[in-house]
Length: 292
Image 1 (spheres, rainbow, N blue to C red):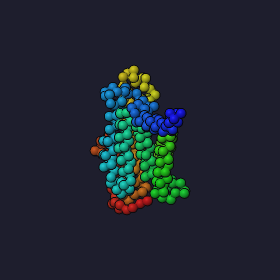
Image 2 (image 1 turned 180 degrees about the vertical axis):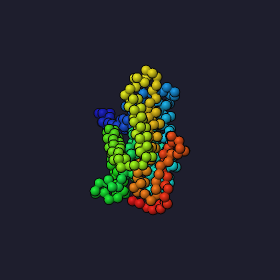
Image 3 (image 1 turned 60 degrees about the vertical axis):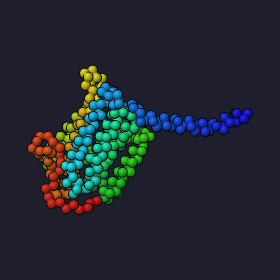
Image 4 (image 1 turned 60 degrees about the horizontal axis):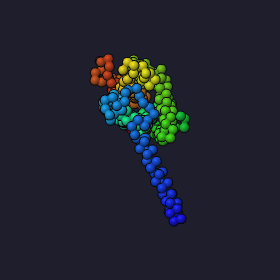
């Protein structure tokens, strides 16, 4: 009888221990290799037993090359307009970091970090560049608008851990609305350099999306011809497309917000080259005054 009572008294403690073990296993599981439901076309562990997708991982390092260059090129504009502009390309560095981690492990946590970092890049761009004249009537300044975007982004980020598709909805909402706004803005633009930049941005974006879709849904074909690297090319193309597209948006923003600076477009390293990284030059006298 005493033995039975002893066992009964130990049951709650044993139950708590088992619950803790299961919770620990679930927590460890989301960090484990290949715990994500997504598996890209590239052959797993082909070049290393520690890296699931070698080419996809290595191609993510393009973010670490382009982002610092864009931070440097856009600094004169950011210094005059708002240093918050730099957050876009600082966040792009994190996109590259989390992308590399995701493709190295194909873990669920890696997937979430990869997707959420993209969401935050869009949110930051939305907050700093969305035209003030298009703000909702109840919002009077950019500070209030930025706080609203922050709240929505935080809610979406938290919700995505409960329901991962929530992040996809948020990405589409931010991305599509930014694209719609850019199209409206370009209809009024007559600057030939800006129009050319817009065409190049769209072309790069379409090519990048084509690589992503083809790798995701046409994998069997690419495996037959032993060329399973399109997602890696997506990384390279999309970071260049972001450089082109964000510079175009920044140029339009500068034309409205700091017109006295006489913003213009140039390409690095040489403006006469057919290809290069676009950036903004300020031909007028800078004022560097605080703006909302």
